[in-house]
Image (cartoon, rainbow, N blue to C red; front, side):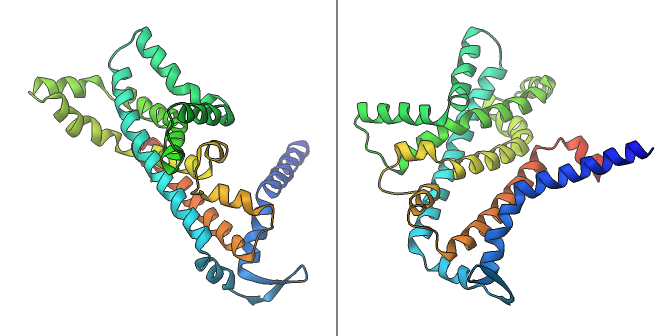
Length: 266
């Protein structure tokens, strides 16, 4: 009994240490954005939101955030549209062609981002396509497509084939079957996939560096600022991003959790 209790205490201490190493550094920018720091010491008696006010006036950072959101939303929309079509095609049957298609979809996600970025850079140069936010959207779409496709395919495979067969027996067309039967059952998977894809796009740096033009996204902007040092408003930005990404993770967990588990918990 004593040994078992000691083991539990040891595992608890190790778990606490891991959480401290992982999330302890995140507390520093949060504290620095909410309290004044003078000569390296936190002034706990001087809470302030000045850093957030300075951030609201930093047009360079705000433009980078807008570009990042634009790229992320565009990549999500494109990956969902392509992913749904691919998932429906692969789920409709088997064969070598479908296996090859899956391999081509997963390959960019499995390769190192630098390889994908270089490949896209060479491709855009060969066809004389100018680098801009459009090329960044294409790169992010290629990167996140495998994740979106897999989530949608798993949800489609979990659906009963009798739903589609019943729809056809009742005289519905393929479009009506997709719109009235399949799409409502894919809504949760689409929402979860969209959240995860946006989070990946928001954080992607290597592909963006290689295919971007004159308009920078937020990771590229922060990468450039590392040479000169960060201003206090960056602490506020980091805090807001942490809150935003935490919310995205909670939303993704909500939509990707099987409905049966949610019913049992409630």
